[in-house]
Structure formats: C-alpha cells, structure tokens
Length: 322
Ligand SMILES: C[S@@+](CC[C@H](N)C(=O)[O-])C[C@H]1O[C@@H](n2cnc3c(N)ncnc32)[C@H](O)[C@@H]1O
Image (cartoon, rainbow, N blue to C red; front, side, top):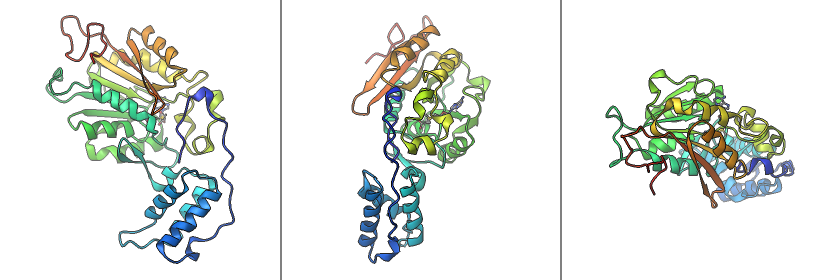
C-alpha cells in the first residue's frame, strides 16, 4: 500500500526496495485458500507489511463474477506488486472516506489523512438551516489539484446537493477524475491551478479545497519508492519549502470565494504556521485543524463575510462557531 505521506520534511528514509523472491507461480497451487496462501508467502517475502490483506485484495481483483480466479491475471498482479507497484494502482481503486475511488497509473493515491480535509469541508458547507445558497441552488464547491477526484467524490457523496467543479493540471489525473466524477455530473477541467475555472464562479464559491503538492523538493527523494517512482512528480513536489502552490492559491482564493467562504489546504504540522501566514498575507482569517489519529493537518482560510450579511455558520471574525 502506498504509505501515507508524512511530515514531508521528515519523510522517512526510503525503506529497502521490495526484494524479488523466487516466484512460485500461483497456478501451482490448487484450491482458492491455497492460492491465497501462495500469494501471502510471496508478498511477505517481498516485504509487504500487510501481506494477508493485500493477497485477499489481489485475489479478489483476479476473480471474475463466476467466482473463479483467473490465475494468469493473479500471477501478473502479484509479480507487479513484488516489483513495487502501489497496490492501489494494481487494484485500480483506493479506499477513501468509505468509498472505493478509482485510481490509475501515475495518479496520486488518495491518503487516509486527507479525510480530515473532507470532514472539515463538509462541516463548513452551508447546509439545512445554514445560509441559503446565493441563487437558490446548492452550495458551490471547487476542488483544485483534484488528482483522482477523491475529495470531490467524498463531498458529493455526502452532500449530493453540492455543485462541484474540479480541476487538475495532469492528463492522467484529469482523465481519472472524470471517470470518478462523471456519474455525479461534476465538471472536471484541466489547467494550471485556478486558470480553467469559469469566470462566473468568481465570488460564489462556498468551499474551495486544494490538496496541493506539499513535499519540499529536497524531500521527494526521501519518499518511499511507491510514491516517488509511481506517482507523477507534479503530484508531490511543492517547491523549495513545499508551499509554492499554497502561496499561489492564497493569492487567488479571495477572487473565487463567496463572502464568508473558506479555502482548505492540507499541510504538515511543521509547515502549518507558514501556511497560516501565507493565507493571512492575503487577507484570509486562517486557523489550523489537526487530527492525531489521522496524522493530518489542515489550514482553513476564511474570507471575511460581507458587512451586514453574516453567515449563520460564522462568528463575527469569520471563524466557524463550533
Ligand atoms: C497531492 S496530489 C492531491 C490529489 C487529490 N486532491 C488527493 O487528495 O488525492 C496533488 C495534485 O495536484 C496536481 N497539481 C500539481 N500542480 C498543479 C497545478 N499547478 N495546477 C493544478 N494541479 C496541480 C497534481 O497533478 C496532483 O494531482
């Protein structure tokens, strides 16, 4: 499994690459439990920490609707996993916010820690009893740097009334996000940061989420090979201090946010004070939310509400009332 990207500056040294054990073809075994055992042995020998879980998922992926495993396909999956491909790229999906989100080669595998960003985004959405949306429609959410579209998918699944626009610069990510989000009628655009957003969204976005790349350039080489070799560099490298994209985002966020609207970025605990300062420089009221269990840190920047029209979910200083 792709390890969670931890504190980027403290990224753990790359673990020993997966060793390539002498392959014992899974076809050599007989019954389904035998296939599973054979796969577990090979994955364990290759250094997979969750060999049993991974073997079960790979066997499931190679098993047709008739319940019969396609052994050549299972062999192919096991070989590629032993070579070090991320489990999620082999399965074609990642578990995120209780959903199976489609992922494809090169696309950033959504991390569990990003569920904090989703949780905060949902909590900040105008909802039943909150301020009605400006034109009577649902709340407007924009997800920039959308990758597979995982954040948007979790948001629209929880709040089908949301009108979501997602965007990313990377071809593979955009194609993947379109596959994940098309069934929900979501527009997925391609381009640099906010450049592809339609002008009519200006000043109308209730929540802007962006899990920008935030690993400092110098720490990318220290990332586990599964991320470093199999996720596109554009998804990881956040510039010299990891905050390049967050600076650019903070500079344009107020242009898109509705009065009292929020921009949410994921960051590391170490980067959070700098990320807060970046938002404050651009007139946003910024605060940090963290979750120790998820090892997650999110910075929320809030545009001041229009005087005389306070949002029901905001205090006078633009912070959320809990
Ligand atoms: C850390 S990944 C996050 C993906 C997804 N939001 C998630 O949480 O799983 C960062 C994403 O930002 C995209 N990205 C990097 N630079 C970008 C830019 N200048 N404009 C738009 N997207 C960019 C990458 O292609 C990648 O998909």
